[in-house]
Length: 397
Image (cartoon, rainbow, N blue to C red; front, side, top):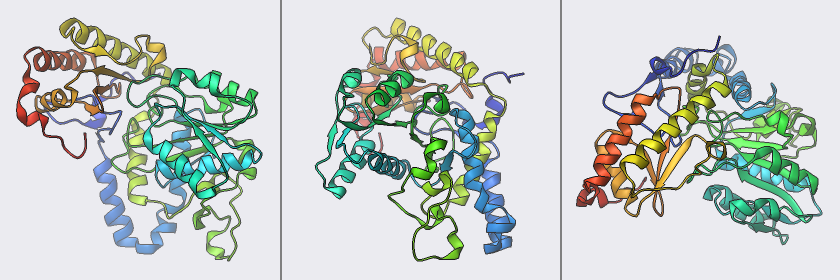
């Protein structure tokens, strides 16, 4: 039987806080601090370097990868963890280009997260072979996938608006013209149902510090379609992607699995915390979670629009077209968000005018949503955002 939602008892939620920013950084799962302490004291402290064997550290990246795989519809052994999302984007994109050596076009979209585009631009500059990055508007992506395209690289859920691409349709279009498909699941994993195996996409990447609650700097993951693994040539040939790392061979020989996409030494402390965080998903059906997410976001839109008619919905109105976040546009969005945060409602801001609110059914309910709308109403309708202190821009928005 699927456990009921939310599961607030599994998370450390500060008193007086309504947290609608899980789309940026998830909350602290209960047991995570204890798990980190265990790794530090009982494993690193007591066992020292022996812990790579005695505490199972070397197996941890794959164990965590398999757990994430179950949340994104990927088979066991097809997800590797470690490094950062930007590194995984680079790896996937470099490998994909090698699979289509006669083509020179990468298609993304103008709404993609900047780091993905920066990595693509950096890779193009590195290989210096007349490659081109095309970034049409999100709604024009299908038309931009033409016969000269080598790779399509998209983030499924737009980080600003929550607009969601049709994974199946776009992947089919990419394959129809002979292109390789890469999906960034940063705002999808743990937020919406994903079927990587069913999509037939070649690659997917993602982070674990948002909806998966792995903590700041938590490791990224990369999925490789199982039938392609032995043909994938890693551009970043790290020693832990080697088939026998401790053979200390001078030449690189990739592992005979998705583990070839590992690069550096795995971050054991972060992986251990992430593993603890993922236990909150035990028994959770992603379809049930999606239904709860839609109900919460629909309630939120109705409450906010009723109370604050001056705000403009910046997310798709149809819940089938958006992920697990809702964004509103407001000219003074940054200041308004700071006023909300001071009153216990935590969301965030993205330039130029977007206030973002994430919906995480693991630890949110309708009461939280209504209380959030009440705070937004107070801040917007009473012009509380005008206080000069809310206009001082912090380094992180």
